[in-house]
Image (cartoon, rainbow, N blue to C red):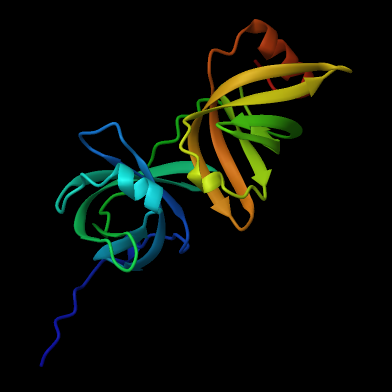
Length: 213
């Protein structure tokens, strides 16, 4: 029996490692779900796996539905539009998605990030975490946290950063979680600051002299 081989443009190949986290957002819904890329047929489809608690939030999804997928690569956020080809509940919660035709950067940084090393205390849902801010500008930052068991079950969209300064003082900043990326035992958060006022800007400028606010 002859097998027809589908031709594809190799320039369309997604340079994503298996295990890359993808945020899936239905086109006509405010719900979103975290997933993980576990396989692909280049030019044809992607296979993503959803944790059970995220699957329950997206049980209304159906074959043919449009999704917007986002992922982080080299600390930049990319997105593409896709459609659900097939949904499986056994043996795992899996979605087969159309292979994207176009991948676009949705990074909204208007200022270059300044490299830094700022120890920070993070309050995220029920978690209190020790982390490090590794780059920052006046709009947001990238924060890295090591070895946090149970963090996958967190669905919070915001967190609070507490940065020590002086001898006993601490600056508290609320930030929206724009992206997350997990690699090994390390989790990175791409954050956008919420309502950063003058005093907070002055403290950040003192902590990171190269930061222009």
